[in-house]
Structures are given as structure tokens and as C-alpha cells.
Image: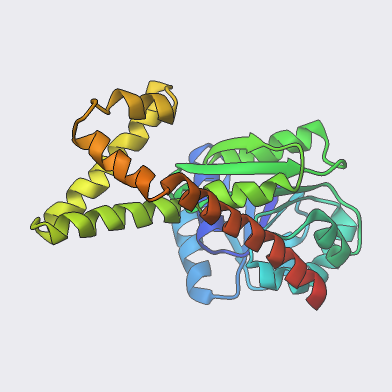
Length: 274
């Protein structure tokens, strides 16, 4: 892989850098631009990558440019990168939620190969789930390069339509928070019935971990595993009946749709401001 520049050195960029180096990338071929001096020092110390406070310096000569800044900052960042992208024509990979390809191209003032992707926070542990979308200017080798960057953080899948990334954002992008909420609720429920906080937390966390591992390693669907652990008229059945009585599926569907619509609104908000 040629020189890759990360614009933004936050948690997600750090996760990707760590994964790339674990998979054999040379630190000398990776550059990071970040305004926080302490973050740059840590990236340099931990991974040996080149660090810069100026985005253009980091982007100089890069064949891959990873935009890893907050959506609200992306328009200004892209405008500042125009000289470099127009000179070197890199593959642009954006991890900014909600921001469309046409917005990125307009802010960069040029048409480029652009891959949008939506990783999630477990990428920091190499257990991420990332969906990618490529515009029509991305070549087959560039698709492979983009996938290589994101494979370093966990599972990757491609979607054929950009609009599907709004659903991905609501599913896997925001999804870890839904599971954290569930574990938190289980812990609180057990605590209210007399378990110590420490015991309730340990059991809730391990249960979530074990269930996730069963899903990954068994190859079975969630529905099949649920049925397999549910004895008729038993304790699990009683709990699931309670969930159904409270319309659990509808609650989840509304939550996912709320997140999906918010992703669309983020794009529209940025459009109106730029």
C-alpha cells in the first residue's frame, strides 16, 4: 500500500492505524494530522507514524486520504485540503456519518474516487463492523485498498447504494449503544432484586459476550439460537412473553428508524450550512 494520510487522529483513526500496523503496514507509510499535541505524541510514541498539525503537510504525496473528523468539521477540512487532493488525486475514504459523496466532492472542488464507510466503536478492539460504499470513480484496486484499511478493524461489507449507509449507521454504527443499554438494564434489574452491583455487572457483561460469541461461532441465526435456549413454559419463555407484551420488536424498529432519519438530517443540516 502507498502512503496513507489520516486527517484526524481520534479513536477511530487510532483503531485503524493500530489494525493496519498489526496486519503488516509500515509506520513510515502512514501520516496523521491532528491539532491536539498530546494525541500526536501518543500516536508517534505508540505506532511510530509521521505526525503533523497541518492537514496539507500530512496529505502531501498521499495516495489514500482518510477523512476521520467530525461531520460538522468536514466542509472546512475539505476546503483546506483542495491543493493536495487536486494535485495528487488520492482515493478518499470518509468515515463521517451522514455526509454524502457529492458533498465531499463539492467541498474538495473536484471529482475523485470516494469511498464512504461507517465503522463502529468496537473497531478499537479489532471487532468492528463496517459497511462501505464506493462511487463510480473507484477502481477495483482502490476498492481492495479501501477494504484493506477497514478490514484491519474487523468485519467489512459493501453496499451497492449510498442511501443504505443511513440504515447501516442506525444498525451497526449506533448499534453498540443499544447493547450497552440492554446490559445496563439487565444489571439494574438484577441489582434491584438483591444481587450486588459487582455481581450483576459481571454476569450481565459475560452473558452479552457469550451470546455474541455464540452468534459468531455457531453460524446459526439469532432466531434459531433464541428458539434453542427457550424451553416451553420455562423462565426464558416468561421473559420473552413479557418482551412481546411490551412490543419489543416495535420499540427496536422505531429506534433504528429514528437513528436512520437522524443520519439523513445530519446531511441536510450540513447542506444548508455550506
